[in-house]
Image (spheres, helix red, strand yellow):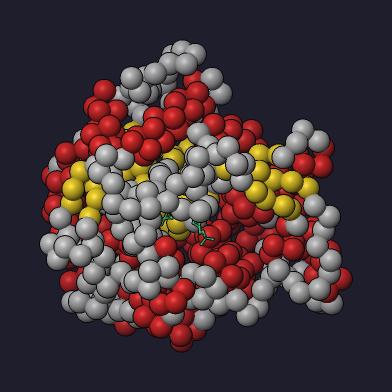
Length: 478
Ligand code: GBH
């Protein structure tokens, strides 16, 4: 990225891109319309509504399946360079399998969105998988726990590149595998709600994700890149971990936390294979627990090679920071990913809270996180693919959100200019108040509010929408 060095500069580099994000299950609704197949979140919310804070679901959500024209008008109003959204796999392939036939209405829906974006000069950043697995795949073959999903996902990816790729500038394969493997297959708080094989399934999920990612990258690289000229990568969770004290032990704990989180996926993709600290610790604990093999699956040398270098940039979702403190390893007993890591985490009392218990406002964290990625992961090009703040209720004069963005962007610019991190773009989460997973509609991240009892799902701009619009327009902070 070309720029002239200006310490504390307020101006974004000339080719820096601004965007805003959503995800299919969180906004589309129309859960069973026009041939869409059921996904694991449809099933989970319908059968385990007690696991959702307000017992809600996204059957209708923002109704974006019918209101995409309105959504794109909002994007135009904001003036963003790109729109990050995800494809609902079972809307396109009801069972998940290409061979079972394509749902033309689903294809049409995304065709309409991409054409309209194109007409408005807004680039598309498309996520292939933002957590809404076809329920059929989960029931019939175990979803992410079965290695044959690699091929099934690759065929879906191939189809998506084939149909949509001419109009897609950025592809990302997976959104935050760290989260959906952990919450879906270890804690059971997210779909598909499994928690019966702790310390094992979570790593199997990650393993199959990494292979699926590499397979999709390879197809894009070999068959589509030359013609379609897009970029492709993955989106990773990036919660900054700050050592509790400046002692060697706390530093080591914070570092380990980052390797078990970001490194779990970044290390195989950028450097090759899992972080050594994961291989060692999970291996040692597995042996002591009486497993014949490590609970962390092993890649063959061939697989290590196939997965390495499958990124054109790194998608970074950053919201918050935790304090990390050394603790003695949890005694050998029940296997779990938490025990494998064995660190203590807490939030500082002084950190401002939000509408989500996990989201504390720590603006410098975005800078430290980017700096750490640059240093530890070969200075990759970075796109911040999500950053945002939640209110606990519908607030139009959302001063806290505006301050959040102002502060985080200030530190992001310091990462660009002072630390020389190659940050190419920034994405607000989210365009709309939407279905916030297990928080239901109780946490509101949108720049546009929706009253979910309003059958029209009218979009109402918050003050933060105007704030972001001004930044995108002037390309500077003040
Ligand atoms: C992102 O994940 C998601 O990509 C996006 O879909 C979502 O809307 C956005 O965050 C806002 O949450 O159940 O209390 O233990 C960010 C990381 C990880 C934050 C899971 C919430 C659950 C906390 N998320 N976490 S809790």
